[in-house]
Length: 134
Image (cartoon, rainbow, N blue to C red; front, side, top):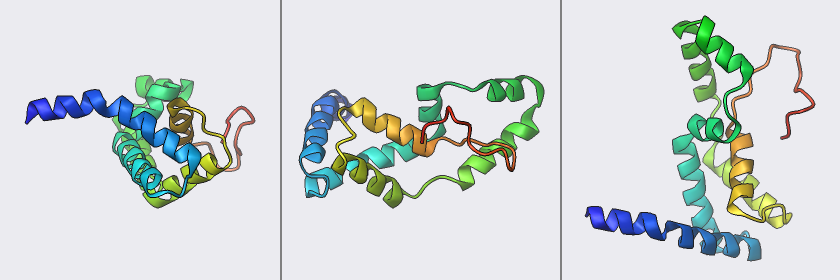
């Protein structure tokens, strides 16, 4: 059984590439839909860890982790968990990006997902900073 798991992991990049090409051709095809279901499910499972791997920790997060303690960390974790996007909405957003020809690589696709999954928390009324790209 382990050999099968390793085989699937090793074959995954080739499968990913085929799915990407299918989505670039027709974002509403059955093969693209199945591919995006897998991409969205894995992104939701990884959640915040994927976003941090992509963007890194912000200054505010580092300051909180070094000064504020567990209470603030748990509060932020709960805040982000309650605001996880719906898988259907993520998939529809990715399909729209493919239809608009804005996805040229797997990296582009994961950048889009990272933005959608990021848990940016600003003070009320602060607005979104101009350097944050949606």
